[in-house]
Image (cartoon, rainbow, N blue to C red):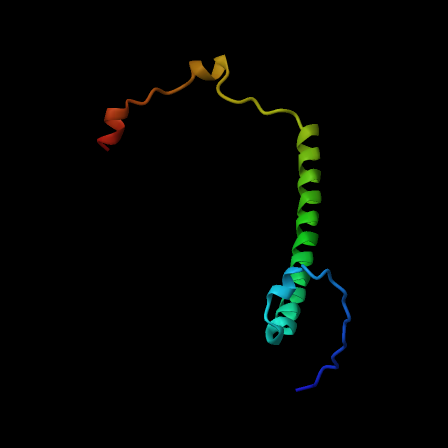
Length: 91
């Protein structure tokens, strides 16, 4: 297995930052975990932005399309078949 080169990051934070609630011996581990989670979070944000753009395109296409009629027109009501619920349930 290839060994990865590790780089150091010096970050200055306010003294009341939540990372300082973590015990000193666990602080670096938790900071690395949080940095990894932030990378995943940023990836998810990018995916959401792409999805939002796709939805906007779909909505724009729908706005330009002719509207579908909802329900039945008078012509459809004349040709409708009536179903007796009691007889239907006895099948």
